[in-house]
Amino acid sequence: MCVHFMKTDIHPKYVDAEIRCACGNVIKTRSTKPTVIVGICNVCHPFYTGQQKFVDTAGRVDKFQQRAAKTLAAQTAFAGKKKKKV
Image 1 (spheres, rainbow, N blue to C red):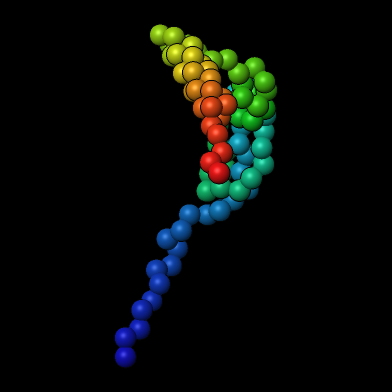
Image 2: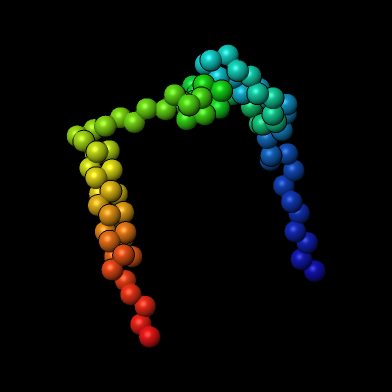
């Protein structure tokens, strides 16, 4: 008969924890560490605050917007020319 025993005391303690942001926001949770310090959270992140800015490196955003406009124009032109076969 083969008996397998599990190792005891190999898992870290799971305790109440605080996530602290650089902006001062504190979030209560549970973790293996009592304190976790982050640089940005949902309160100060530009995407969630509506202050998001696009960084246009070498005109990439403009090029993308031009390609999207061309695609939309081509799709509408094709839809206008498309005729039903009877």
